[in-house]
Image 1 (cartoon, rainbow, N blue to C red):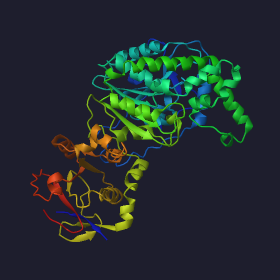
Image 2: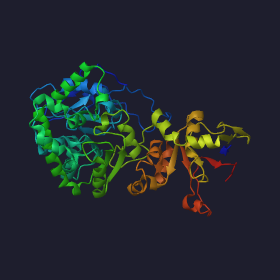
Image 3: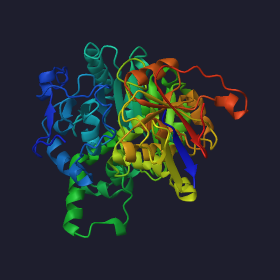
Image 4: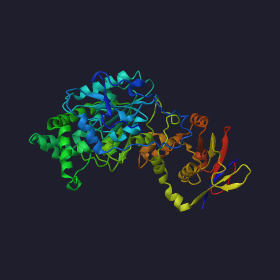
Length: 514
């Protein structure tokens, strides 16, 4: 029997016209038939992903310049009402992919997720709400429009949730829909909700906005921050003065003075509407709060909302501004995966709903253990079938199902090294059976950082249970189990009952047999 011993010694289309509008702009969203985007779905099943260890697909990066260029074409006046569009760079939707509706901020373009379209398109069917510049639909009208869309899509999304991703006023829109429809199965990702509008400095803007002539309102710092999320100073201005003027021209086009005043009034009514109904929201919510939001007190507002809603969690981003989705350091897919918010049915299945980590996610998850590697210089040893102990993992089988059994001698500090070595030497992705404490809301609130356990979920940790254990073994996975728990920590006798599979005892410091 082999023993492992740790010793301390894209889809790319033409750049123009990357979106597709619905035929009936108000009543009917885009069709969800498989022919809607051409090729049939290629979403991998759980069984098909077992041989693959990392999601190494190439993602084409987009930035604020792409956002501006796409918006120029999208905001051309057509006199139409709000409508949905689906970015073509998202590719063909998967058979089991849940629907994701993006509800934009005050800009209304619907392109706020442009940095994330490629990655989101691999696991979601994405529709983005576009609100034309001169549209004057009331907040209640927008709520009803989103409700009609969800109602029409429920027949296509049987037993699947519908995701609402909103920022600023879009987050208010999502909360309003959830409050009015408690029977909807919604998962909401809300960035800097504008429910705190009454506590923000934006109200002071409207008092003197009326005295400014049309082009000069774009010079208000709040205005620039609201559109781009960047806190501009003189040293931040472009080197090319022509580029600066072009960007200011874009700001005038995307939100002229009349529309800016209208959007501020819309924000006020949205905050009042949602705050009066917030207590009835039952949807699953993840709030993303920026630490450098100069427009809204997002950090405090996230805590307030979470304290009033039992099914709400928070992720803080101390260095982010108001429109965090346009910032280069934010990866929405990684956030959703790490928080355990991705599911394709009414209940999350941590085994079948698991998505493989990207190389960057793998590096970030194991990097926090690098100090332990440098301090201890660990050596991996394994035992061949003839009983010979060799350096490395040659004695570890290449195929599962395999169960690796260890104990908490080093409080799990060796886990990062084990995951890294098994991947680099054997191309094996370990799936850990973790304590349920790491998956519940109460434990997150006890931690200094609510995202403390996100790395474990990214690397495939699942709550320990007989069902999850069986599912992993049936998928021929390599399962890591530390069965002692509290009994082991208190040095009491452990009485495990093993299943019929390849069993590999794992010890730290010496070769140990069970």
